[in-house]
Amino acid sequence: MTNKKLTHIVGTFLIQAEGSFLNGSTSEKDGKNTVTVPKTLREFKDDIPYVSAQAWRRWLRDTCFEEYNDPRTPIETTQSGDGEGESKDKFTTKKVGVAIDPIEYAEHDIFGYMNSKEGQGTGGVKATIRSSPFQSSILLSVRKTGWQGEDKGFVHPQGVAISLYEEALDEVTKDKEKFTPETLKKIEDLKMILKEDISREELVKKLLEGLNSLQDEKEKELINNVVRKITLTVSSSLPYTTRFYNTHLQGVFGLAYHRVGLYRNAGDREELEQVLVDKYLKEDKIEKSILPDKYATIYELKDKSIRLSRTEKILKSLAVLRGGAKQAQFGTDVSPKVLIVAGLSSGNLIFNDLFEDTKEIVTTPREDKGYEVIESEVIGGTRIKLDTLKQILWDYKDRLVTPVYVGIRCGYLSKSNEKELSNWINEKDEIKKWKDCTSVEKSLLVNTPQIVLCSPIEAIDKLIEEIKKIEQPKSNDN
View 1 (cartoon, one colour):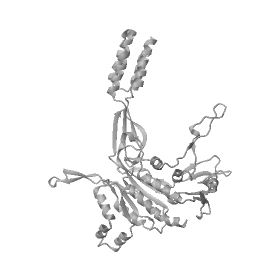
View 2 (spheres, rainbow, N blue to C red):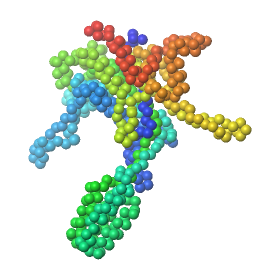
View 3 (tube, rainbow, N blue to C red):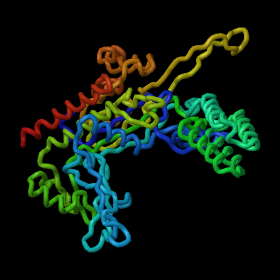
């Protein structure tokens, strides 16, 4: 297989997101309560949860920085004060930018960038744009229905809050001679409010409203002290509800391996600014590429090992991916539980829609009473669509440059699916199974690319080792 040129690395993965909230959308009103909801999309009559590509790409970036501590893009600000009405040292978020440098910062090389400039396209001003070599889909729920759950609670226990309110009011009125009978009556009336199921904010509002009519300034100050004490010492008891999901999330990714460390400047768009071209040519870090392109000038890193190093880091980070919203509340491990990956000579994201959720209730009918249920059992679970995978491998056998690595967390897939997959991959079982097959079926067996079954982390490790073997002749040539 290694006589074909490796240009892309593509794959798919599955995250176990049972009891999770990884990417929030907006808030909704459910009666008096506010409900925090995850991102969903509409498919026919069903709302299906998903995580945006932008969100999990950020998880991947952060994971990579934590794993390898590579240089991270510094945030730059410019002085925005005019020196007259404003200080020259004033900085605003509107003036925040980043230093675009794909030679120095691997994240720019892998994830791309765009820096529009005033007057670009005229007078020699060029936009600096690099489309991302790393492609990513959204993470979409495999389960279409039955995924929704709600977590209800209070920020502060309501009963505890009410007792603290009463304590604060009792404390200020213990010296009754400081208050007029009229004021004491109003305070007793206000205590009755505590019998209602209200939040701290509502109580404070009613306290202030009820005491605005007080004439004595000393009495007002005493009551204001009560309000301040309640505000400072009692957490809000506002009820909250979080809608979470109970599902698995599947995503597709691809890396244009041939573009890592390669920068194309053409027309009024450039991937590498001229000032950086001049700098790194002088430092002997880049060189003009010999790749044929009459419409552009192409530069590439002289140290070809950097491409493999950056590829290795981003893929290994994907295997141990971490991140997501509301981790303190739901604590979800987002590292892939199934990871299928391979190297191709084309950029097709071939491993898409390979997973399905087949949990279902199977019933045994009673013969004498039609289909009355007398027993049931849950079978199935998360599965790889094995027939689909076989067809993909057959269709793209001439474009696959490496073996296909299927990494699975042991016990994650349904037992029947894992066994079926293992038997198919095992060459002896496959030969025995197909001993009486037709010539077409024999061809399918013989020519289907090699499949390697392992764990998700091992899948990436083995792929990287294979890429190193492919790149070895190039290293020897250098």
